[in-house]
Length: 437
Image (cartoon, rainbow, N blue to C red; front, side, top):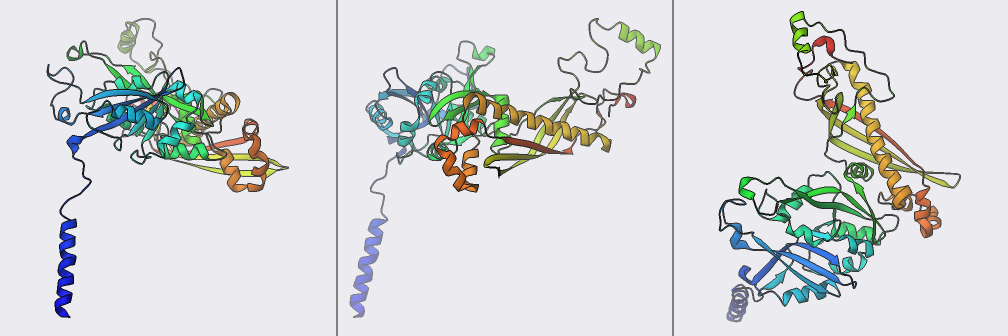
């Protein structure tokens, strides 16, 4: 009996050893054509043009930058194919490649404007079904053809997709992945949006003479109604969108001081300059107004940087009419004080906080007007909020939600706390008697 057990265990161990000897379905790296960036356009006859940017691993180790040597080459190349569907285009691309097409490393998907305006639903049906594609890849839209973005030559970094991903990760505007966009496409009460990216010309240096010099540029967001692009929101309005979807932007926003229409700051006291100093001022170039920094295009400005932001949403129903209340809270750091405010005086901070809160409210209201009055697209998800909080009312509104959204009352308020006033105290260009309160 014991001998039988030993034989059985020997057979089991031999089977395990044979199974661990290697992978039967392994694919070596030098047998793969690795794609990291994809662009999808619509042709004139309604088919899909798919452009893929492939990595050349051997060129990634080549030292130097653009123009550093005659033998330096781009560590990528681009292939295109036109098909009826996305998998069809992939199969046609495979026919042009000497290696197996590998799409698991695609980090960004670029949608062309014509495709986005025609409808992205069929494309996302393929993007979410293909097993090899990662649904965590970011999605962007561009004006014109998407394939042109693949020809950019960012200076910082050898791979364009790395530069593009880093720009999106700066949190200037909200970013959406394949998964998040697909969920918005099939959900009720919310319309999709994605960042809008274009190309910006770079100033050439002597080493770059004759080479293409185009960088990626974040230009705002593309707004969809259903699965169709209906317009673009510029970068300034996109910051208001970030607040309205509770993704506070990490960016600076400048406000004038004193506030327009508000109580003016105390006037500057008469100058205490000596006659010799007055002579120096009279000898200054003519045409510049008096006062520190008054020759600038935008003097008397305050620039905060958002450190933390949070937005709460509430719905209320009165006499059968639903309304949404949005309240934003922010913690700011003052990074520019051109107005000469005495930030060491506690009495200065409350009116400054109120004005900063008013500027956030203005940005949110401007984005709300664009979405309600011009584009009629609920990219904020207010319909989804009503569906969760008032399901019975939503059954009455869902059939014609966009018509109700255009008239939806949205009450916006903001609250700002200034926790930091910069690394320095009062501005050095202002004397104590010139500081404003």
